[in-house]
Image: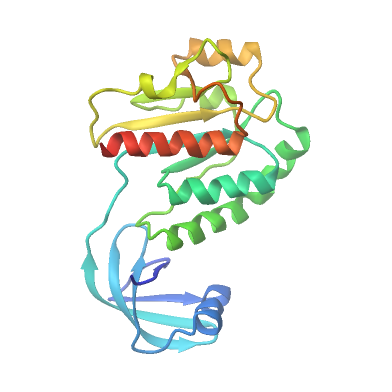
Length: 239
C-alpha cells in the first residue's frame, strides 16, 4: 500500500514539500524521482509521482484524483487536559481512529501548570495529528483546537452528546447509542480529567443536555477511556 503525505496545496497539478519534511522524505524514506505516492491537500487525495527530490525540496506531479474515504461519523473528542505525554499519545491514537476534531478542555481538576503550558504545545499537537494522519492514510487532518473552558465546550453542537463519567448511576455507553444511524450524524464526546468530574461539573453537563454515560465498572485512565469510547462510536456507526 502506498504511503500518503499531506501537502499545503496542489497548484497546476504540482505540490511541494520543503524543509524538515522534505529532509525526512529524502534522507529517511529515500524517495526518488519517478516513485509514486498519494498526497492530500486536506481536501482531495491524488496519486502523484515525484518530479524533484532534493535534500530540502520535494516536488510531486499529480497523476489522478483518488476516491476520498471518510469516517462513518464525525466525532469531536473534547478531552480534559492531562499530563502531556499521555495527552499526546491520545491525540495520536484518536487520529488513527478517525476522530474529526480534538478539543483540550480546562476542567476544575486540571492541573494549573498544564492549563498555562497547553497553548504553547498546539503546534506540536497538530504535528502529531498530521503524522498520525499520514500513517493511518486519512484524507483529512483532525482539527486540534485551542484549550477551552468546560462551560464553552458544553455549547458544542452534535447530533449526540455524551459525557463519560465514572459515576455508577450513569447508563452504559453502548446501550445509550442510537438504534438507527445516519452518515450525517455527529457525536461530541466529553472526557474528564485524571481526578474525575466534580459534582458541580456533572450538574453543568447534565443541565446542558449532555448524556452521562459509563464504559463499565472499571476506572479507566482518561486517555484509555477516550480511545475506548471513540472506537465504540466508530464501530457502532459502521454496523
